[in-house]
Length: 123
Figure 1 (cartoon, rainbow, N blue to C red):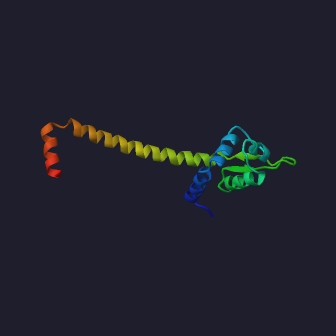
Figure 2: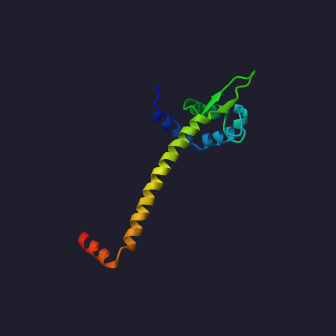
Figure 3: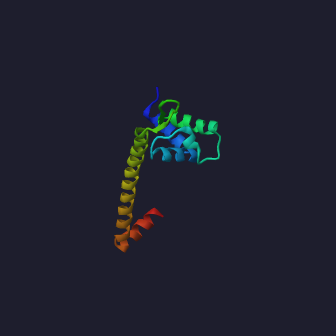
């Protein structure tokens, strides 16, 4: 049983590889076969298959069967989880930077005497 945290870890690990990111980008345009996904790379089919297994294991893609073909399909929900995590952290850091900026502006706007006193106290 995987937790949401380990699923997110696995997804980030999978997306750390540029070949896998390119495969995900291609699948964002629509389903594709292994041969179609392999075409832009100078890599063997077994090499591409290994990348697909990593993407499949973390839930980013799935494979279906259509006659003799096994097209790969992007599972957008897995990407949504990554986007949600990034969005939450982006909001948190934006709020922190806004507070820091506000604090620095108050320090700059403080009368010169107050700044000198604070500097002497901290020295």
